[in-house]
Image (cartoon, rainbow, N blue to C red):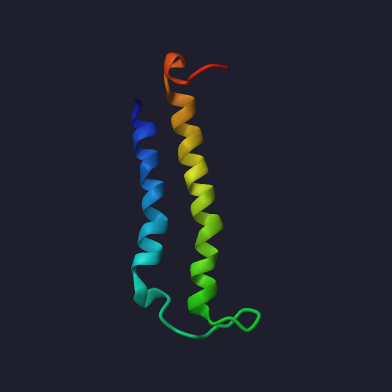
Length: 72
């Protein structure tokens, strides 16, 4: 496993800390389509988390040895 493929795991910490640090989003304003900030901030992390997880998966998959990738 290369150094780059190990460091890519740091991307998985971004959504973790973005949703763990509650004072960052513990307020009502600004609203978006009538939803308080608290709710749309949490929902915005869903596609961000999916994207970051996909990046980590693709980097790990591309750096895996061919015999560990499975059948083609």
